[in-house]
Image (tube, rainbow, N blue to C red):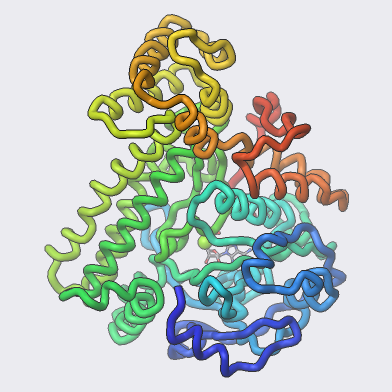
Length: 496
Ligand code: AMP
Ligand code: MG
């Protein structure tokens, strides 16, 4: 995605890091943000670095090893050319209008030009901002490692997401339910604009800013909308489609986000704001991963509807620009066709079906039902299924089910469907769509416990596995085991 904005970068000075700053958001009027500096943290140290992302950003290898990078990415030293700011947004949290929120602990350094288009760089946990409300502006080591690993894991899975370049830690203490230590995640995305940004300017009746923001998003990310009769309705439709694809990807891989408030919904259809997320262990459609979500609003099987609810809020916010309510409603309609189609396509790939047949929907529904009634481990089932041989049965898969009769009936149905499918093509398709490695809660927890003792090897090992989750990685089968009993007692809430 290149644009006029990227071209502007050529005029800007090269900072010592080799970064070319664009800072397009900072050129919007100051009603969108507050310029401020990060608050330094004492004696930072490296916790984890994604060299793969560094390369994509065009960072020189030796820079990410330098003390300058450590200081800059902790917020202790300014990068020449950056223009730090915190943006203002609002949002609906757990279904209720929450009013003004904003970047309470994420400070954006600006956007840098890269071969893949401009990328915004944010330091999450870099100190208080005018939008911190009661918060301390900090992030703890535990949640920073989770965000770092899961961002790179979702990217490895081919799921749209914000990325994470590194985590730096400090022995500075932070009070949560317990006393913990502080950390900063450097995260990147083409933009961190959320549905909540639009809600903010719409609800506060700032129509000029609302239009400026919509035009900025269209010009940078959805230029085709400009060619339509109603660009703002076209924007809503395009965002609905991207969000539908994102939800299909989450559901297919068994990812629960945990806190899908409108301020945590990306206008680019990216997974954003990793908090109480979880990959499913045993398949339980009603699984609630966020301990604070007492009503189960964001349970696994509710996610697609919650995304639609959030899109409806976005549509409401855009109404002053769209003008005709019918056009807004029509734009949202696309979600209802794109989501089921996208989910079905992903599930067919997981089943190794190389073409689409009318009976596939029933097979997919039956598969979900069987996995649910037998509480089968979701990731292990799909990876083992890659070795399924029609009609001869398949012990490693069958062993996962206590209700053998139902399994046998399903296996027969599946075998019949597989009959015309080329075996080689099927295996290939399945191995690329059923990951061997996902960031299960207990794996993250083990790496976090070691990191608290300054042993970061677990973080690094997980990063390597999760960046290539479809590869075999011989010698690392321990990371593909069933969760241990203690995994059920890990409680992750919004507080991080
Ligand atoms: P979240 O539930 O993490 O999406 O956060 C909701 C809002 O609270 C956002 O505006 C965050 O920036 C803000 N927030 C969360 N934690 C903190 C914190 N420790 N300090 C300041 N603001 C925070
Ligand atoms: Mg958030």
